[in-house]
Image 1 (tube, rainbow, N blue to C red):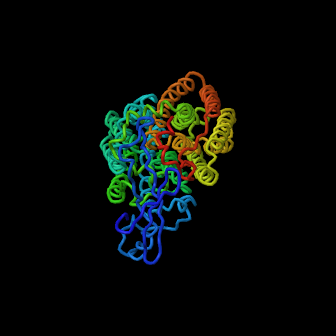
Image 2 (cartoon, rainbow, N blue to C red):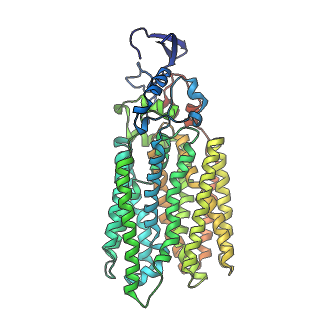
Image 3 (tube, helix red, strand yellow):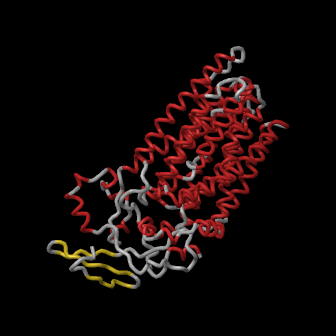
Amino acid sequence: MGGEGADMVETGEGSVEEEEEVGDRMVKVALVPPFQQNGCLLGREAEHSSSSTPLVTVSDVEVGRKAASSLHLEELPEVEAMLPSSASDTKVTLRLSKRRLVVLAVFSIYSLVNAFQWIQYSILTSIFMTYYNVSSYQVDWLSMVYMVAYVPLIVPATWLLDVHGLRLTALLGSGLNCLGAWIKCASVQRNLYPVTLLAQIVCSVAQVFILGLPSHIASVWFGPKEVSTACAVAVLGNQLGTAIGFLLPPVLVPNTPDNMDYMGQNISIMFYGTAGVSTLLFLLTVLVFKEKPKYPPSQSQVALLEVSAKDYSYKQSIINLFRNKAFVLLLISYGIMTGAFYSVSTLLNQMIVKHYEGEEVNAGRIGLTLVVAGMVGSIICGVWLDCTKTYKQTTLIVYVLSFVGMVAFTFTLDCGHLVVVFVTAGVLGFFMTGYLPLGFEFAVEITYPESEGTSSGLLNASAQIFGIIFTLIQGKLTTDYNPRAGNIFLFVSMFIGIILTALIKSDLRRHNVNSGIIHDANKPVSNLLI
């Protein structure tokens, strides 16, 4: 483009089109206005914004069809039905890479394994207490270390994602997850609790490079009409890992206090199986993950591609996020909801066994019910968002229904009928874990053009902080009084979260860019931050 015979044509305020002769006809291509990247100083335009050229022209599509047989996987165009109509209006060809599905699948599965390693201790609290001869408090820390490690490491982790990109971050997450799994294999002796704690610390560091990726992968690899669903699927992988962590460990490691050797053998089988799967997934991550697709999948990604690295400031990006009142409200309300979920998941075994002695296996099944119901909720909410873009309304409704579910779970837990507990746990899980991708996507919308990894990372940091606080308080109330006291504390906290969510101003910035509502080239995207 832009060679001989190409003319620049002014088409309106702040927009430019370029005419090219292709065969015997002219093709008009609208130049994408340059946007400033997340973290740029307010009102300051990028130095290179005086010139820009489109990444892909309409004529490129015809040329591309003739050479389709020689393209690599990431270059193959798919049906453009998943792209908004505004894409064609701007004359920029947006392509969906087939590789995106493989990237999403591999990420979801190694996120699954990381979540499995988080919950596998707490669902077997009594067994690990007996095997390692430690207190329930020490076993609880094998789960809480995930939350503790996340908070101080989230800033360097999001900086790494923003500066060095998706591939390196994914390799670190998958690689450390694999390393932690193998260290666990060396901890299967009754005096090696410190080694299994070390292994769990390594896995918790891996989690820092995993939890912030769903919205980033969805935004970079998927089109506007599938981005929320993709985010929900990525989050679903982590939820599925928690579900399997509730179900599988009680089956693999039955409680055999009279035979410690047999118990150790079963623990070893569980650890080695996890390590083998983690190794395979690390190799797949090395082969599959790329920084981004060759062609942008959405108009919002086209806008961000116009920015050079020198225009980006991670520090300024953080400052911009904390100046965003809507994001701060979401940060707190998301932390309350997700922290409550972490607390319930960690203490579920103790709550069930307190009222139903000897029902460790059913405790795992109830946890499975809670998470599987949440997975269904996540997918439904993701598809709903892609269809309606009603981010605040959906988030608020799901929050209220989660509160109702928590109240029902609290007052039916000691009813004496496990069937009732299964039902109320399923209702609670459907809405509580279904809320997780809603928070990610809502944050991306109200903070665009800030990095998705940074906003998601801060949301997760808030969740870990509240998770630690809630787990300690609920655990203390459960031990000193009863599970009902701890659950009442949680649903009172969730009611505060409802109020905060209602106060959030819904400003769908990314959606507006993708829809062409923000189109003035004289107004850079950084002005959205004002």
